[in-house]
Image (cartoon, rainbow, N blue to C red; front, side, top):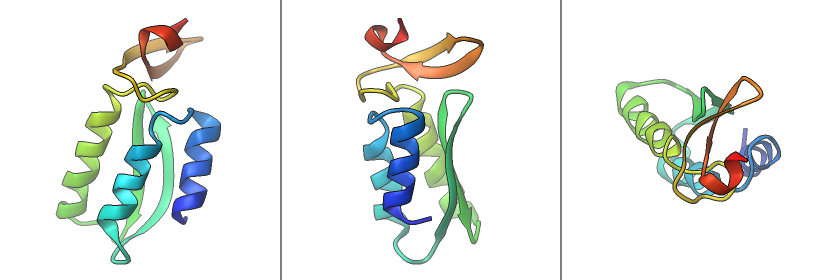
Amino acid sequence: MDRLEARRWIEETCGEGWLHLVDSVYDHIGEKYEVTSVYQKWGALRFDISPWDDEIDSFLESISDKSLTTCEVCGANGKESRINDWVHTRCESHHK
């Protein structure tokens, strides 16, 4: 999955708020790793990468942690929100 596909998927399913995090991952991994999927799970941005190793796992966990405090819609400070029984990370404005 290339950067454009990942950005498009996150923008369509979550919004624009996490696009800078998607870019951070692609900037960090270079050509050493391949993103096999990107998605939102339990309110966090997640990546599946190949090959997997401890170094990239630690970096991806830090990105996931950042996403838990970043509104997936706009990029402002966010927190866990439950909307229609789904967990999202949203700012006060986008929680409603």
